[in-house]
Length: 476
Image (cartoon, rainbow, N blue to C red; front, side):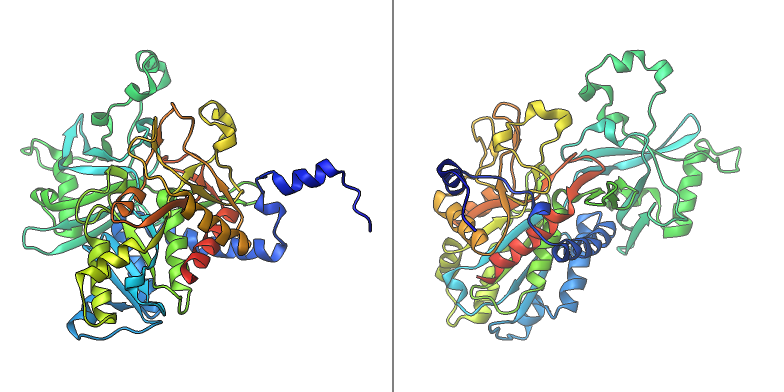
């Protein structure tokens, strides 16, 4: 059959860059695999609403896949060989895993790096109080949130309390059907004239995010704060805790709803904490599902990204360097710090973090030629930062070209984009901290609607395409 296209059409096809909608490019079998994969993702998301829970569930999956604990291997001086799988959980809040490759680690590794914390409300150290014969918890928000979004929705409490005797109790309330939920109240429209005249950022204050807990008074006329005492009595009977134990607690307030399919076609997923667990889960699964890579493949899952990656569980800690040093010590003889430096300088990393999908309800903040779209594949973001690339990680053209070729050669549908118009804002990821170690890094993740809200939305086809992209990267 003769080609009826004009010369201009042929040239257009050969020269122009065009975004691709994955749904229009894949077959029914691929779509079914995507939907099946996302069922596992939703289940994992529902049980991983905090960084502690994500780390604990990571360890369960790793052990089931044949990974061994790094500390045990160090204690027994067990040597590692290609194909061996090793993991380390750091202070129950971050994790790093590796599948040893055929090449020495000193020649570099391939890293998938993501963060597993999410915006939320934390309890203050002295949280419990009574007012107007109702009991409340005082909270302090964590990360960038729109405060008004956290009012009048069902909320759950997750976390740990270290009691006075040194024992730890885990608390999860609000997830089971028979559990109570909690809420932050709002003012009725009839009395909100003054409130509604304020800026959205000022209408609800941080000190106003107080969690409603109960209203039944303790039955004793000589007690001053009867409702507060009744709540403490319930907590003491159930968990054995007293008020002072809140001083050594980490209790997080998160949305109580489960992840759900969105749309008549069920093409999307709505749920809490998808920034950045929608990238962390495919990254984890990609590492768990590979055999023996050429270069050692690593999955880094960090904490504290939403507040600057500080601390001994964040990306600015020595977690990655220490892990690689220990694995090198168990694979290469003799050990040398120079091998660790060589490993870092020759390593490559995909910073698996999300980007903001274009929302047609708020088009004005996006520069649509350089924005990302749901259903158009994994996002390659060459640079991050804000207003002039300040505080940015900026990948080299060579590394972007390498990843682009890798994805094109393996049928991975991708798109590029940045976070909004130049003067609108911006953001950062853990990429800059890996780049500071000498690693080649490119931000590479999934487009999200309603980012940082209690109910973020992602595309199932993007999630599965990203999983396949991460697997391709791990195997080289």
